[in-house]
Length: 95
Image: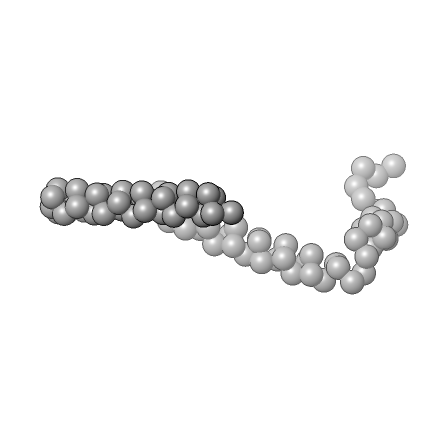
């Protein structure tokens, strides 16, 4: 007896899949699987290309923002937050 799949095994498998998923949804499922495989292949090729090439050294941008300007932005945002909280409290009391 052969250990491989015989043609009638494949026919039964296809019939079960059609019964489970329905003939209307199979083309969409196959299309999405195909797209996923294409993306997977592209990503694995990119990974293989990156590992072969010397890794690119990326530097983080230096903190050029002035501390005073950042403090002013934080203070302004805190003030706006406080105003919103007051408005919410007023709306709760008004209802």
